[in-house]
Image (cartoon, rainbow, N blue to C red; front, side, top):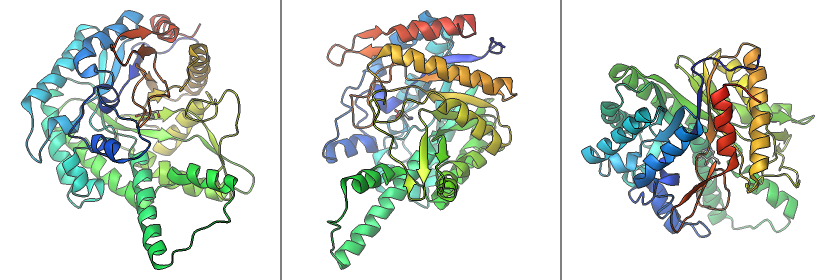
Length: 408
Ligand code: IFM
């Protein structure tokens, strides 16, 4: 089989905070100003104003779908106060997609929240479910005819961040009582513990996300005809000898709680970039290799096939959309090679009967990678002074795959 099924979604993905610019009511905007060493999102790619140009690039290349997010912090800048103008803005984006022949895939929450929500405890707040579903209900007012809706992006990474923050504050409390500093720690240990910062997630936090997702899913089903799911970051973890139990433990809290939470959804978003080993002490740092990516991860296009097979197993056969896959590189030939190999693996999984509905590359644009501008994931380069877009050869390459609906 070289063909992908008819109607297969071919496109690229973005997130509001990473491309729109001036997301001033969001928690991330505030965090960027406070955290030393973080670059600022600022005007980002000014996609808030230039979205038509961005969509046009996708459509002109031959792609058929665009995944983008609604920015909750813009739509609900104060608790319970919804902006009709911002909702109308996102409705215009949906209409523009359709006009250009692109199927919109909408994310309702992609890492950012309104800052007021974060200040009152964010996802840990007892009211989080009610507050989020109130937003989802309002957002559904512009989504009646949208076919693909994700409630949240990578709740498992959000849970990993929350787990790490909890651990840090517990450690600070302990240090306060007994201020000892581990001067014996070697560079290798330090490297490992910094890599392990987001290595695990408390399953109890995951289960709360699942509850919130199910409540949001019910609202989307009640108010729209959309197929609803959420998108999960897949680690494609493997165990070194002796690391099997630790690998299962990490994967359970960080992924499987969420894949299990997808059962009963219409689809699940698989997001895979690299693969990593686990030993008895936890995640093993990616080996230093010349083809490592700009975010320090290993070049592993096979991660996508591994992730899709794992998602299919744990969800018990929920249809998959690849909602993110890509590589942070300044070498566009490496991006094409990576994507080609990833798609070959995806096709092998599909030949074995896994129901995959689409492939959305991360990302359309070189964008704000959560505190950093250097890692370039885009099919299109963006001049950050003039906002001029320059398509890379990889955009035309992926567009040609989409037009043929098969790999070359
Ligand atoms: O940029 C992120 C995106 O927001 C979520 N998934 C991973 C991407 C690359 O790190």
